[in-house]
Amino acid sequence: MEQEKKWVAASLTMWGAIMAFMAAGIPAWDQIAPLMGHANWVIDPTFVQSLNQSVVHLIGDLGTLFGLALVVIGRFKATKQVTMLPPPKQKK
Picture 1 (spheres, one colour):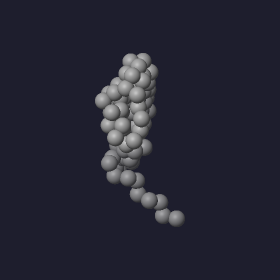
Picture 2 (cartoon, helix red, strand yellow):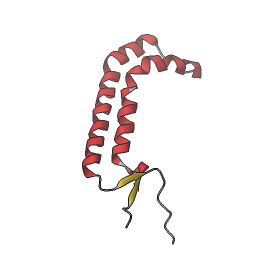
Picture 3 (cartoon, one colour):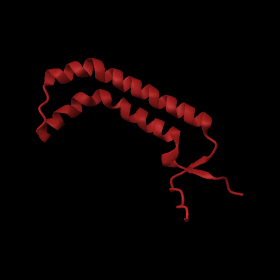
């Protein structure tokens, strides 16, 4: 009998990996912020630099740690294989 599989979007491990990947990019905010200036958002460069030096790195580090914790917990709790196909719809 074939083992039941879990959809990839329902995987705690996959969400943790996505979160860690995205949080690791947060310190690049000073590279992204000038692009947002073209969207008519006024962003003071000195504010972005001060934010980048303190809060942004902290948020990025905490997000990465949280994401990695989700990966580890997800792997310990995993009981099913992951598949890229969504689960079949239940008939009513």
